[in-house]
Length: 178
Picture 1: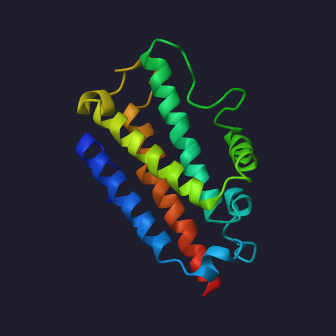
Picture 2 (picture 1 turned 30 degrees about the vertical axis):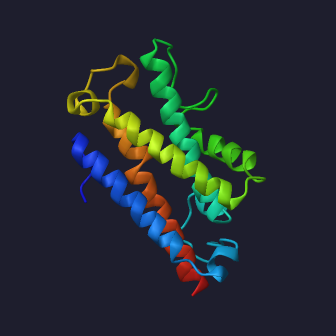
Picture 3 (picture 1 turned 135 degrees about the vertical axis):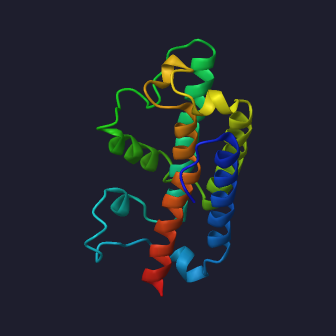
């Protein structure tokens, strides 16, 4: 599916990819769920996240925390409180370090809790996306705090695209276990 450029496409893609993610998780065996992720043998997997996430919980928490970034960013800015998308002091060059902080923060979080947290944050982000018009989501310069992008592109990145990232990671893990 092409990257969404309308509200309908955004909501559809986010819903479909979330369902695909949940179906993939439901199909995971006990072995796959209990085997730590290890992508070190695949030299093509160079990005830090391949080393960072060790299990399903880590992936789900990553998605949850990015939902929180989105929800808090939109809420604050809609109230007139100037807030960047990323948590200070992080920026787009250092957000990998922020992701590690999210990972550390949730090492004591149970998988069952991570699943519930993600389900709720997905529902919250979908409800929030519903409140915006097509123009508000996909026209540039509607909200000054979005910068040179569109609000919809942030929604796509934190939902459909991020779910696709998680699906790819889980499929790679399943393949490693096979």
